[in-house]
Length: 410
Image 1 (spheres, one colour):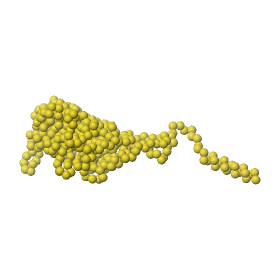
Image 2 (image 1 turned 90 degrees about the vertical axis):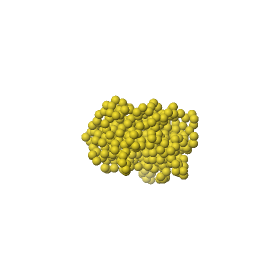
Image 3 (image 1 turned 45 degrees about the vertical axis):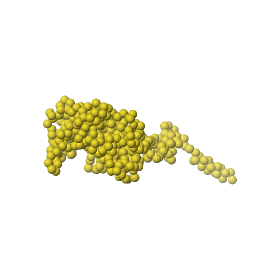
Image 4 (image 1 turned 180 degrees about the vertical axis):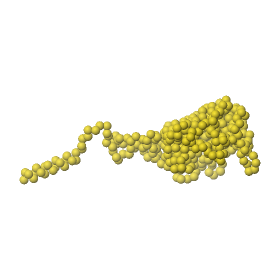
């Protein structure tokens, strides 16, 4: 009898010890509550609250190229009819692409912009570039002839925000594209001879930029600018699109790939005027890369928006602007993301949708101009957005008279 009692007692003691926690001699390891999600490495959907762990979890380190955003502040803007009298706009607007002028917003003076070839002033890539300080604008004057109209030559012109045009008669090249400013004195051109030229229009000094061996050279059939290398304005970085559906940023001198993602044929990118930042839009995602390192990634699909169009960076690369729609529709609305402040600002007035032109940033990064279409009146207007006060106003009206660029105060 006693023997059976001792056996039962031994079994009971073994069962109790099996259920007790096992002490650990390891230090620095916290218990993870698997029911609580870890902090995200990408932007969460706005409607979801930030997770609050009930324990002290072991936090997974984000990838080096990702910036962790816990929450984004969303603001919906309605268009107001009248700009307040005390709203001080500064700088110079470039207006009216057919007969371009500079409009000084500080003294309300107008200055003509030379355009002698019969074409229009276009703000598309390869046709217009503003210096990092906003004091100079380099642009292409297209000379047209014949019927149907054909372009005979593309002449480079440079104008200050004060309205003074630089004498470019010394420059012999008659077919070129202007892709940006290397710095405040030198402009980056691509010529009909498939050469990259760095020209100082203030002094007339120029030199040919020697493309590295790894960089593919366009053939003679490409007419110089159609297949020009996708280089940053300061010629330090190159965007390389591969046949395997990838887009990469490479160091121009070494050819080293410093960033790479999947891409589709409609992937677009924009560089900031200060040459530090590029925004790359592929499908429903926008990547922000600063000096070769990714600093942010915006998943617009997770935020409820469609593919972005016409991505524009502020002069200092701190804000993004683009057009996008909700629910898979085609009525794109202006959307602004303040990268540092984690704010998403959207022009959500249902009567208006963004046009293909724009957006246009002010040199100080506070204001933004966007052309919009009225859904019922079939007219085009300009809307001015104040990203500081988070208000939107009607501005200059008319598709052919409105601003196409914004220069700094002389």
